[in-house]
Image 1 (cartoon, rainbow, N blue to C red):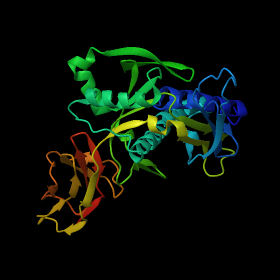
Image 2 (cartoon, rainbow, N blue to C red):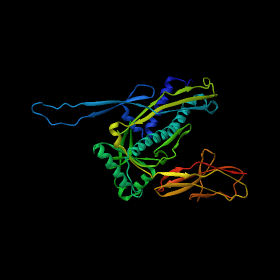
Image 3 (cartoon, helix red, strand yellow):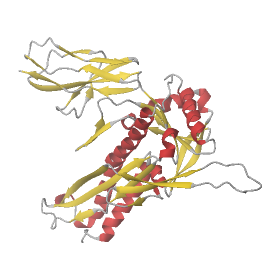
Length: 388
């Protein structure tokens, strides 16, 4: 069986695109990109139409002439991301490769591609709102009041007949659902996303899309192993925008597939996945995106790496942070200096953490999450404790 065919590559790409739309919180923005035109590998043109208002009709001269201005703005897509995945020949028989490959690639899109794209889109929109001062001050104990403020601000820009969408942090979404007053106002409605019709909860006709905290920051760093919140990122509690308020331009290249015989690097099936994408906002819609974000948290002094002696440990590590909000802390122990596999340390909820007296010889890795208003925050640098 030859898996390296145009038919298989195209089929995988199409199915992955469908899964992207089903699982992505921001995938519907791709519906607004129909009028875009690719003019290069990473450049698109998006038209921005502007009209002049009405004028008085003159019985002698007739109609007042008015111009229609169409600005074809060029945008360059910033996100060019890719990954090569391999499945060892011994992990499957040849007849089952197509089915297993489909499952693996689908899981990769669901767990890696979709979260990154959502995080990027929401951070760009949230960052735009902050930059243009399109933000509100809200009370975390009164999320519905804050949501109404955001909706009013957006409707003041676009009117009351525009379909709106509210992205809501998971904590705030739970608060809304647990409110007896608000729960009576929540209805379930159809939400169109490409060719897929989804069921979403809405309030007063505004679709409410809950998003996990990890994808609701104002800035991220996108590196060789996914994405992480940027050093000074802030939590986006809520973000309201017209459904047509942004253009998600996504260009997925056809999947490249290689059999073990064609793969010169390993005795394995190889799948190359690559995607260009970015999100753009028309000039006329820059002030139609509003957000409620957390107070800024600044870590002025992170936990320091230290060396201690086994059997005589009496040391602490600490963090110093500043914010206008109320700060709490949670310490973690990680598997390595990159902070992966972090596990909460029970009871370690202050700015200072006393190291366990029974630490064994070797290297131990710690970091602290500084949380503002009990919802979300930022992580410190990794502190390495060397026990000799």
